[in-house]
Image 1 (spheres, rainbow, N blue to C red):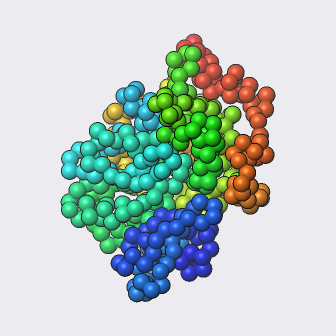
Image 2: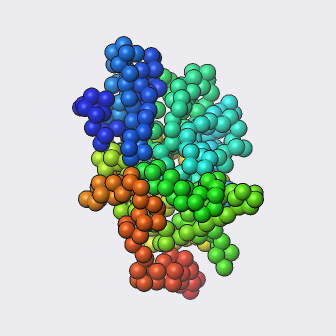
Image 3: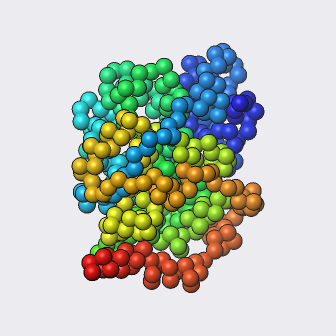
Length: 406
C-alpha cells in the first residue's frame, strides 16, 4: 500500500519517526504542519533512494502482531506511594521492577512544561519521570537508534510508548536480535493537537505573567474521605509566578473543556481516525491501560478510587514478565471478553467528528482559548453531575461491599 511518503495523505502517517531515524543520509526530518502535528519532510538533494524509509513505514509494512492466547490481569500495585504517582494502578512500575533486574535500559516519555519527548534511564530509581500519561505525542529523537545500540551491547531494553511508536521501533529493529527487548504500550485513544494546550498556556501567561511549569492530566487529588480521585481525571496545571510562588489550577474531567473537546474527537491527529492499531491484534508484548468498568464487573479491584490497571500480555514473553510482576500487585486474572467491552481503542478507531475542520479553523485562528471553550465545550448536565458526584462509581462500590458482607 502507498503510504504518506508516496502520496502525502496525512491519514497514513502516525508520526512514529521510524523513517527519519533509519535514513542513513539524514534526508528526512520532522516538521509541524498548521495543526501542530509532525510529519517527515524529504530533502531530495540528500536522498540516495535506498528505500529504507519505505521498508519501515508502518502503513507500507506492518510489523508482526499478536491476537491470540492473551493473558489478562487487573489490579494495582501494593506500594501506595507508587500507585498515587501513577496514572492508573501502577502496573508499569511493577513490570519494570520485574524485568529490569540487572544491566538494563528503560525508554519512555518524559515532559517539562508543554514539551514531551522520549528518553532513557539506566536506573529504575528515576522511573518517576516516565509515569503519568502525557496526552501529547512525544518526539522520538534518536530513541530507536539508541535502543538498537543497547540491544547489540547485550543490555536488557524495556521500551514503552503508544502502539504506533512500539510498531515503529519493531519496524526499525527488523534485523536486530530482540530476545532482550520487552515492549510495553499504552492503550491509546488518539493524540490531540498541541495547539490547544499552547493556547491554554497563552491565556495563563496573560493572567499570571508566567508559562506552564507542569501539567498532570490525571492528578489524583484527595477527597474529604482522604481517598484519591482516579476516575475523576483531574487536570492539574502548575504555573510558577514571578514571585516564585506557584499557582495551581485543578479541574475535574466533567468541568474541563480539554477533555470534552478531545473526547468529542474534534482535534485528534488525522491518522488516529484511520488507526490500524485499534484492534485486539497488538505489536507490543504487554498492553497497559486503566481498568475501566472495574466498578461493574470486578468492583473488588476498585481500591478506594486510587487507580486500577489493566495489563494484557500479548506474547509469551509478556505473559512471563506479567505473571512475575503480580507478586507486587493486588489483583487477579480477568476474562479478555469482559475487559474488551470497556476498551473501545482495542475494538475500533475513533470516528472523525464532522465538525473537526470547523473546530481546527477556530483553533488555528486568533480566537483565544476562552472563546473556543465557550463555543465548543458544553457544560455538564444535572443528570451527569448526579451520576458522577452523587451516585458515582465510589458510591456504587461502597454499596456493593456492604451487600457482600451480608
